[in-house]
Length: 299
Image (tube, rainbow, N blue to C red):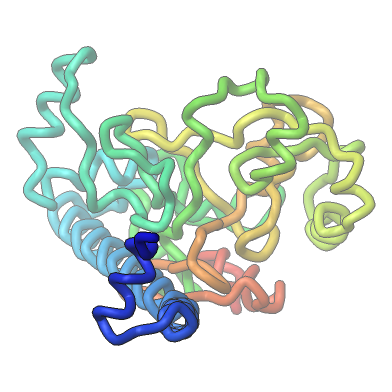
């Protein structure tokens, strides 16, 4: 009778089946031990790239200010493109609505798989403040907004932070509720009442309450995040929390929460008005987070 080929080969190699299984087991254990370290290293590299993106954006914003004498506060990513050696791309996108050109890689966070440059997505949005109304961030709606108006200090005021982009495969209101709840940081939800100015704490408690989240109706995709249609983020709730429209209207998000969000473990990167970039923990107390979001709160 002929010997099984596999067993014969093992014996020729001086290895029994038990020894082979032992080797496979050891390799599996080593792989399981090394994989978390590899993933952690990859996450750290992506975080570093994101931080560098914001640093470059900060330099461009200040160069824009030195040239024009005011801060870009409507579409900042679009406005600063000439100061990042992207004037040709900006001209092409402005003159040809059907252009197939991709957006700048510097404007997307590598940790967000939906931030695809071929869709001209952007991961970095302007700070809209920490009040329901009037907004007290860096988006005022007119161009003559100077750094001197940031009376809280440039190093104490957020300028731009990251936010996960919308789900590009779903239209604004067509996504099933189950889909919205599987990836809530890409959607916005509705409150059952409208919160007025100075009710920031009540709004915060409502939106962080698990009971309210469990029954909240989703309002679609929260905001726009392309080069041509930028919307701000705000400091009403801490980073990496759900977005809530203020009231039961689908388009009332402008007075609600549109928080900074990311897939970086534990927090988000924030570009301060002085050009520095800090990693802010999602566990930050709301008072310093509110203070960071206001330009003139005396804090």
